[in-house]
Image (cartoon, rainbow, N blue to C red; front, side, top):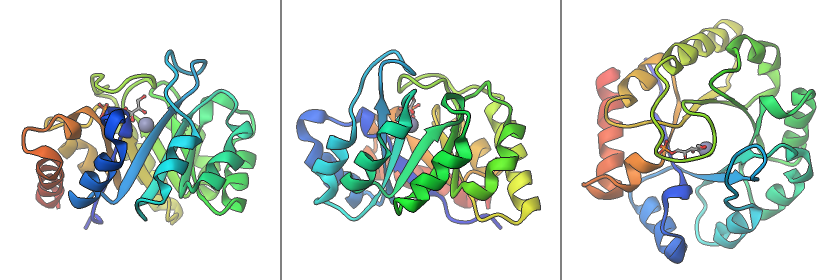
Length: 224
Ligand code: DX5
Ligand code: ZN
C-alpha cells in the first residue's frame, strides 16, 4: 500500500502582497510542506526570489520549507538557505558534475538533500546517487514557470525511479513538481510519488486551498 501523500504548494502562485496570510491559509488547509521556487534568471528565464523570503516566513510556521533551487550555481547559496531555515534543499542534476558532493553538503547543513531532475535527464543517472538523496524531485515540466502543461512521459519516469528506490531498499522520497492537476494527479500518485508540488491547480481551485487539498487526498485514497 502506498504511503499518505504530502502536499507542497508552490508559493510562486501565492499573492506576494499578502504572503503571511497565504502561509496561514495553506497551513489551515492542511498542506504539510511549503515549496519555494527560487529562480536565478540563468538556469531559468525569470528571476523569482531567494532565501530572504524563506527567512521572512520562517517565524510564522513550522511547516517543512522545501526550497527548490533553480540555480546554475547552487553551491554558493546552500549556507544562506540553511541559515534562513530551509528544511529541504533541492539542487538540479543538470548544473553540477558533483551532485553527490552537493547533496552531502546539504545534509551536513542539517537539511534534507534533494536532487531535482529535468524532464530530459535520464532517470538512470539518478541511481548511483540515491544513497545521497533524501528526496528526488522529478520535474513534470521544464523549470521556469507555473501553469505549464504536464509532460506525459513523466509518469513512466516516476515508475522507473520507484522501481530503483524499492529495489535498493532506499528511504528516498519521490517528489513530483510541475503540471499536477485534476487530470494528472492520479497517474502521478499511482506511479509512486510521495510528495506533490502544486502551483496553479491548488491556488486557482474553485473550492479554495482546502478544496484542492481534499481533492488530492481523495485521489490518493482512491489510488490506494
Ligand atoms: C516550475 C516550478 C514548479 C511550478 C509548479 O518551474 O518548479 O514548482 O511552479 O506549478 P504548477 O503546479 O502550476 O505546474
Ligand atoms: Zn518547484
